[in-house]
Image 1 (spheres, helix red, strand yellow):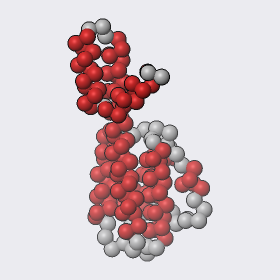
Image 2: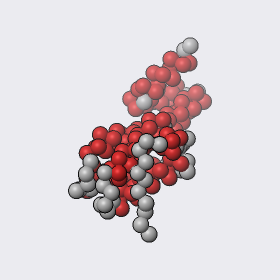
Image 3: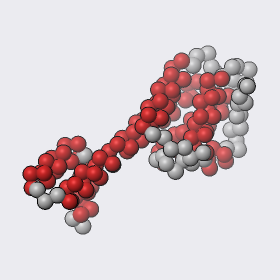
Image 4: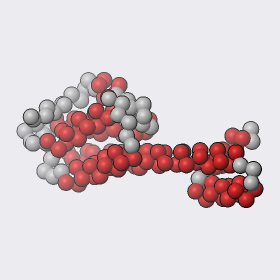
Length: 162
């Protein structure tokens, strides 16, 4: 079955209202931007076979509109897929329009990976720190927090000292 290209670039309410509540605002923004840029590419390549780009478009659209929760492995696969599509798509008029957006989208995905791992680990360390009475354990945890979560730990200290 041949997928249909979405060509509308004036009436883009479907893109603007798409939002995945599991993802950061930044990542939502760059996914929407990619959808819009892909529509521009589709519009200027009417006769070309853009099957990979069209599949990619629908995958991003599904993530945004169906509120799909992305796990770390899904994010890593998406980063790889975006990179392959961008680097391996040739002879498509206007492809350069998505290069900057691709870089920003991949950066937002990497940031999403960080937030998947850091807050859980940081919060667990804070819970242990608050619930332990052993001073050696506390000092070890504080050293871990200072070395691995410098910004988060400084923000935490600022909040508890208010």
